[in-house]
Amino acid sequence: MAVLEVRGLTKHFGDFKALKGIDLTTQEGEFLTIVGPSGCGKTTLMRSIAGLEKPTAGDVLLNGRLITPLPPRARNIAMVFQSYALYPHMSVADNIAFPLKARGVARAEQERLIRWATGILGIEALLHRRPARLSGGEKQKVALARAIVRKPSLFIFDEPLSSLDAQVRALARAELRQLHDRTGVTTVYVTHDQVEAVGLGDRVAVMQAGALCQIGSPQELYREPANTFVAGFIGTPPMNLLERGATIVGFRPEHLMPRAAVPESEDVATFQVHVARIEFLGSEWLAYGSADGEFRNAKVLCKLRQEAISKVKVGEVQEFVVSRSLLRFFDTKTGMHTAAAPI
Ligand SMILES: Nc1ncnc2c1ncn2[C@@H]1O[C@H](COP(=O)(O)OP(=O)(O)OP(=O)(O)O)[C@@H](O)[C@H]1O
Image 1 (cartoon, protein in one colour):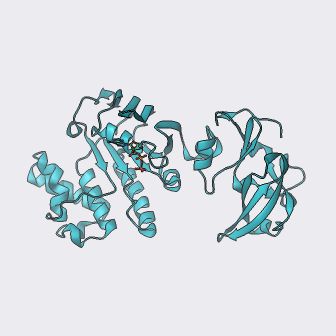
Image 2: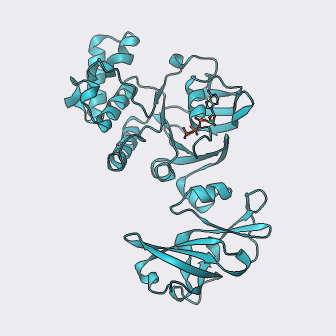
Image 3: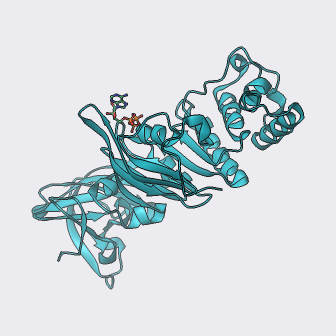
């Protein structure tokens, strides 16, 4: 198990600042997910950690050892990308053995490691096939087996599941997490999908425009977003953000309730909401509305259970409430979390 530390990592491409001084430390054996919109610098950060990109400034340390000057092969980091990059003319067994052969590992040891890796991933039956005869999910497993067989100190996954269809992807995600739990290798996993990031990670790091906005447990990010970007990025659907002068008031769609569905005794803030439409989601309903009055018709989403939906009148302005303890406040200018304002 290893600890990865990134200090002040900066990367410029000409005038463009792709990474603006990233500081990040993993815990030992942690599964850390990195999430952010396209172009925010996730891949550049991973490539810099793996040694494929030379940072403009800053350092990378693995177990306290400075690895910034080392070439990729001397870092003992396994990186798995979206494209599996399997060798098409080699069997699955030879693909998995490739990094071992390159290191001169003895044949008997190679076979033992291949058995171990294919056993963990459940692909023993595929050993003699060529990649062209594998499904996307199987290719992914072979790529993973090839990565773990080296017994790396650190795994880096860069959107490894994005080419799989939704169903296979959900399964592969669970398997990937199990693989981590079995091997205990510290893992950094990049995705632009916040559902995946929150579901997989022990902690989640949110990036925006080359900077790290917040790093914390999925619960911390959900409950206490550091700024409006995180509030609007994490959660399905994301937090409602209503501007009122110097302050933005935030609350989760699942915490907004019709007045009639909440006990009188609760300490709540009241919003006048016009509900335009409701949508059936299965176990829940989603109401699309806008807040009246001082919030200048801001769009509001409300996620409701079956019991509460009967209290909603579509096409009318109605009182909705949020428990005061669930309100969050942000500075309109900076977007940063601030102290509670009267409401
Ligand atoms: N070699 C390069 N030369 C110039 N600009 C680059 C280079 N590599 C990346 N960039 C730019 O740096 C920014 C960050 O790219 P990066 O690939 O790290 O983003 P990302 O968050 O991984 O995006 P995505 O989710 O779309 O893969 C982008 O604007 C990209 O165009």
